Length: 474
Image 1 (tube, helix red, strand yellow):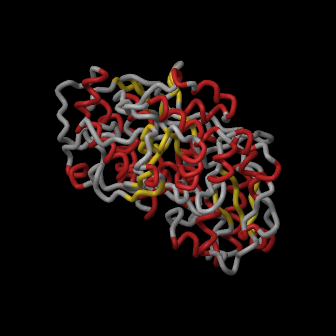
Image 2 (cartoon, one colour):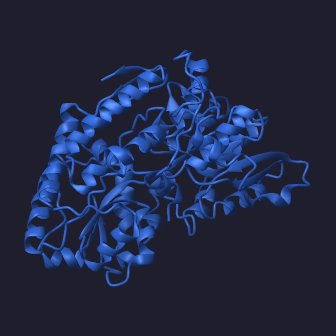
Image 3 (cartoon, helix red, strand yellow):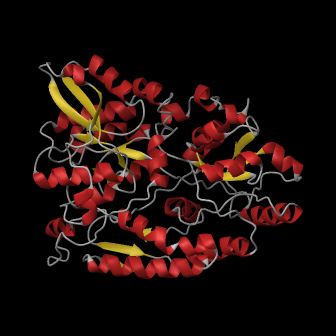
């Protein structure tokens, strides 16, 4: 499974990181704001109930790799990450870099790790040198000057090794704040036997997708072309990006654009709401036992999924094993070739590191060498690369999954990886994710339209951002 990518889509935190006061001190925002209120994902002091209840930097730590270096005279680097099996790469690094000793620790996936980092930064000790940070959370650490610019440590030498959009995700202006890691390019993943039963070919356009959804559900009212996971904010946003309806503009600093109610955004919402109102889409939450059961039983004929998705579905697949195929997402314009990304992480060096040069060397080796990717592309990590040499490797494209029989789903996923546009994440995505679980709940149960949810979400996020001292454009 692609652990990093999946955590991005799966996070349903009950808390937000606190400390906008720290953000204000750095950027000049809302200096009167205290660190005790509910807050954005901007990493800083812990004063909120969520932060105080979360793991401290020293609590619930699992040492994954590198402990055998404890007696070494090498420079000691601490690395926090949650990807299964990533310790294999850490061990390989230590064996080939005797002057550096990396110890990997797992303090939790996603939000628990971010809170632990935030608490450690406030305390002035205990923060890692390098950590796994999802793309959408990186701006929150950049705005508080919590991560180093890696350009002085040679990061730009690796720029051409990554797909351009991934490099953009870790950069602001001339600065590079992390090395890109994995990603989740999306594809139309479908049950070939089931589509054949309904005489449907994979839709090349979204117009055809809607027509197929209506046809299939009419032929079998108990079945659907796919599900619509209304409370999965990042899944929705990934599809919005493919429709050129991305709702944020942010390039750093104290100004952000929030636009969930523009013409493109409302047209996107209307498209999906038409199918929801006609009950032509299943309403199951994505990457769940219920969704996988429906896919395996033939209730859902396809899945708008990320490259890491098949590995998550595999343990639940029985009757449909071998029937699943991957092809490009439908296009809004016939003949187009626009892709989308759902998930992925990068690896910054934290500004409190006493050894930024060595920490950067490790982050660069972990993500920008074939030696490392030959490890992390395999089980149990199964990371999907943003690293161009691996994306271009015919052997990687030929890898298959028991779900897909002898077909090659990686051909579709690797093809999508180079046709993705960089997304500009605002520095308060944790707050957005928390609010979305409530705002979009009515779409799932049919008591609210997607358009109304977008309108409500716009109001919630604009009010929140202004309260934190941001200048908001709409």
